[in-house]
Length: 459
Image (cartoon, rainbow, N blue to C red; front, side, top):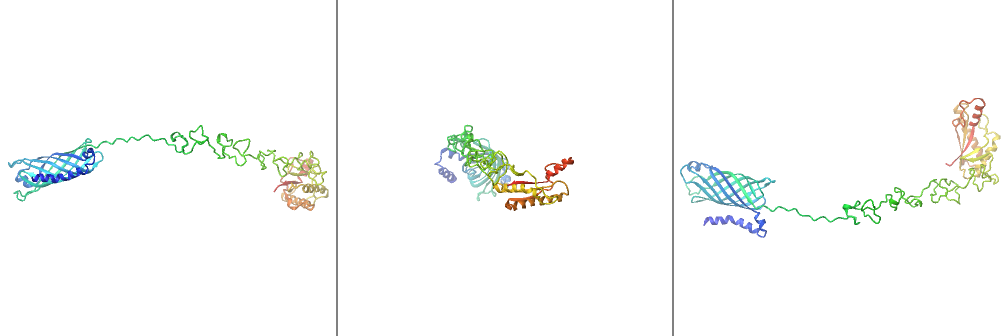
């Protein structure tokens, strides 16, 4: 009767745990239970049992346990049977124990190798006709042989208390070691979740799915690129003209597109600010005197003497501007050509001085008339030059003074000083080289190198 009560007392936690999970599926509940067993041998440790009772030989031990897994590494267990068989050299009956125990087992899984376990159990032992309280503690490792079987070595300590009314003066203590095993219902293997094939994505919404779209984030638009699926035709310079039609793919057409070259800006070949499409003289700048009848063209001047044909009295003979309409543009002592007021007679000075001789007044008066008659001649550089006779420094000074003398003459005859400047070059810019010249040839070369030039400048 007492044993039945004890059995119920230890079975109650297991039953309660089983009821707690009753709502779960049978398979899940079964996976929480394990059947464990131990088979081993050992010896008695307590002196009284070894020496007086003669239980000093090796004993055989076996037990079976039913366990319920609370969490993965912790379980409640009930020892339904536990048998020890001792032979006695003192002639006593074979010693044996039967026990009903309850306990806890801690059994963490070490990777996939197996479980290290340690447990403790307590309950009542039947030794002959006596009922005694006892406990044991074990340590072991069970290798995971299969999904449902774990097996490995163990060692266990046992302790059975003595009844105070019993004549034996000492608790029984013994140990055992051997093989333990656990049987479990294996958990169902997780089946790979079959993921339905992903639906094709079209990020840019242009009906070409991303795996096939070479421009997945740019819609192909109304003008798809035939060479790149899902891409729009390019417009590298962003001028609104697509690259296949753009003749200037890296240059925007701007506000003034070239009507002859799609996607290109209109050019200005002669840099006269008149675009080519309107310029009737693309390769000739219109200059300071544009022709009002022909956009981008200068006023016609057949003889290039700075006098327009319309007012040039001698349009086919280079001359110089003149206030007299009958002489305007006609040959005389000076003519305007190639950016110069060219004098057809030299300017004479007193020897080694800057005094202008009277016979040079007519040619200087012609220079004055040309400058005053033409607003296009904005400024004139009067440049003095000498020959190589004498020291360089003296020649440089003389050429500068002679240039100033000419400027003073021209200014004194009605030309603004702001339109004139003087510059002397000494002997540094000869018209004719004098090396290897002798006699008359040398004298003629030096005479040509002694000169005054009138250069038209814009600054």
